[in-house]
Image (cartoon, rainbow, N blue to C red; front, top):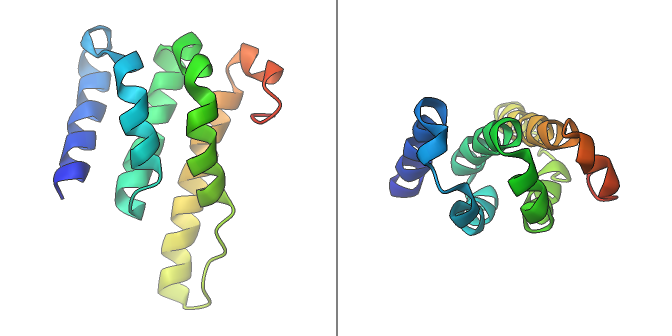
Length: 115
């Protein structure tokens, strides 16, 4: 719960005062959060989409470290249990939205892993 709360705080800061957030210092923690539990990862997907809109050039310089955990999430195979499968599909959709936010940055087409 503490990790989720800290990422929720960061998301709120990005929403309300993005110019105060030291985004470049936050990327290592964001990469760890993307590989964390589903709830934390989904929060990090939202943060990633915010950063893609607010600081795209900073994000692109750090994108290699962020793509591995995103790829792991996107390539998950949901179990057959319908409740678990629905949640797993939600997490995968969230990761795809984050990846799409990165792909919308014009310079991202130069990185083969994003395209």
